[in-house]
Image (cartoon, rainbow, N blue to C red; front, side, top):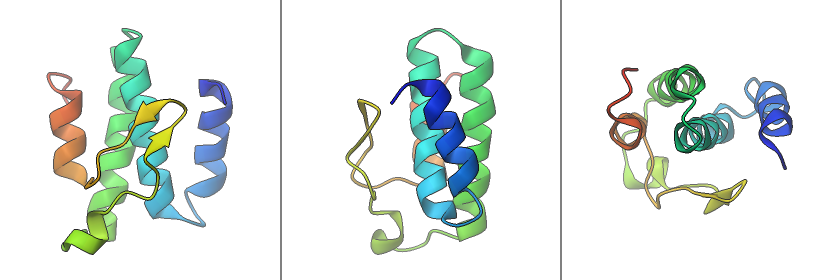
Length: 93
């Protein structure tokens, strides 16, 4: 799935499954960072952080990844807003 389709999938998923959408936004942000598009990386990084914060991830089970890979991007076994910020550094979210 290319990034444009992944962005559409994010938009369709965000209301129905915010947890999955948080991971998708994180994957889009990581891909954008790899491609040197820091503006898009920050945009989707912020979306991911906001979703994780709204979900109030507190336990190991809460932050267990749903997908090991999204669009070829590896998702950490445990993922939450702190991981998103750390992986996207030095981009300011």
